[in-house]
Length: 372
Length: 82
Image 1: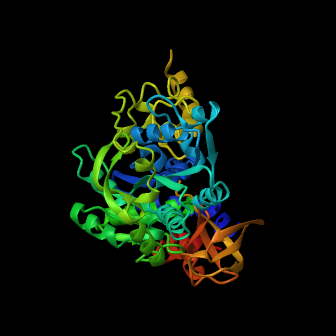
Image 2: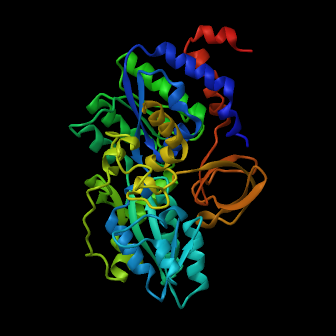
Image 3: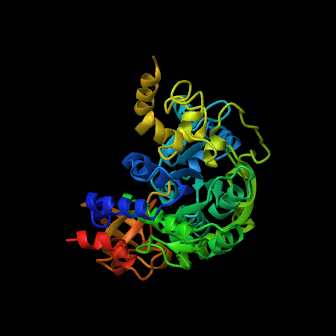
């Protein structure tokens, strides 16, 4: 496929890896923000092409992983109701709540459906006027325009049986939470290319200045990641802390204005709880009052429900780049993608799931080698 | 979750928020909302996320990744380039 295959070219990958090795004179810890980038890095072994001095930390950018436990519980409570058709992106279905998950609700007869787009859920609402159709509106800034459009069309077309369970999160407040944390190790960031496609990257400039960290807006193919790392290392080595854009073919400085306008029309900024991290101020989106009629939490009376997280899982530290998955005693034994203890093991883009899929055999080999 | 992939815009229908188009992803066609890329025209490559085009691929900028090492003055690499 055009604009995909050429960014996986082996020779170009090796040229970049050599250039990074030449540029690197000391140790640097760089965090890729987005779970899609984590998946590319672990799948293609990009971290193993880098010099030993460079550590890639895997960031919090998987919305499935950071959706708080109580939202999953709200979803399962709503989905279990007989009048409800509950629609969701597929990777939310296995996320464990405190007692159940959406797959279990479906297995017990709940009408839970996987959709590709929020507009598909809206179409289901049009076709089933006698049922309540609820869409699980999760995601970062990338997904917000799509979800905003579904709500906007439901409102203007008076599709009253359509509502959304909103758990939208925003990247810059999460980056700030990581940088201001006392155990922060991150010295540079690869920012999420598709989040910035929507939002642009002007809001990252004050972060780069305040915390003196380079931030490079980066794409998702192997060459994108390597170029992003090279740009970030070049800044670190020369003592610069600027916002740069590697993902030029998609990202404009001011982002996608029509998308931003509809998001601002439908949503407002609210505090959000992040699974494994806790509440971060101004870090999420909620529906504006004008669209409150489409809010599933108030429609089904679950708004006040709260639930604290289990303390066993270290996913919070994994999400902040403080620990790697193998440092968890439950990794690959009591915690697997089939039976996840925490959210980073659930989604394909979760750091623990990526390590389980691509790295667990290496770990077993290393352990076997250590045994006498 | 923020997965978005490039595809070629084959045809356009509708207007304003209901503007949509048929997009080919390596031969697999899908109807995609063009509400957020009002300037997109047939033949453009668009980046698509959950059924919405969120940007138009900038052809000239797409080359940049392959020219960056030269621009960086990585001379040793330059000599090895074909």
